[in-house]
Length: 135
Image 1 (tube, rainbow, N blue to C red):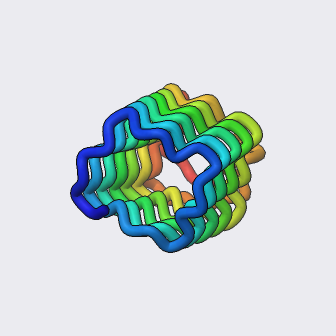
Image 2: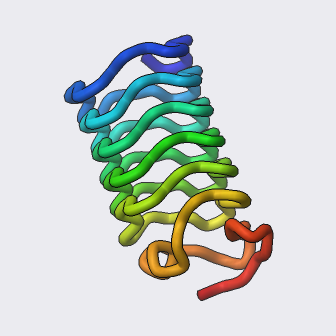
Image 3: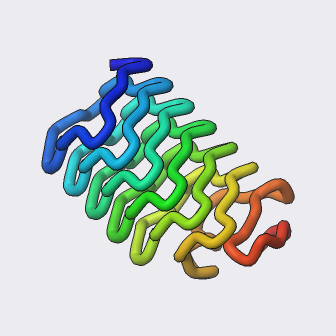
C-alpha cells in the first residue's frame, strides 16, 4: 500500500504487522488499537490520525508527518521516528523506550520529559517548548 491515498480509512484493531505504507497519505486515518509493529511507514502522512493504543514497536516512521496525531498509550518502543514531524501530537502515556527521535520536531506535542528521556534524541531534536537540547 505504499504511496496509497488512504484518507480517513478505518484500520481500527487491524493486524498490519510489517505492512508497507511508505509515502502513503493517511490523514485522519483510524488506526487505534492496530498492530503496526515493524511497519514501513517512511514519509507517510498521518496528520490528525488516531493511533491511540496502537502498537508501532520497531516501526520505520522516518520523516513521517504525524502532526496533531493522537497516540495516547501507543507502543512506539524501538520505532524509528528520525526526522518525523510530531508537532502538536498527543503522546500522553505512549511508550517511547528506545525510539529514535533524532531530528524529530515535537514542538507543541503533549509528551513528558520522563518519556523523552527513554528515547534517543540529539541536538537537532526539537522539544515541545521549541528548544533543542540533549537530556
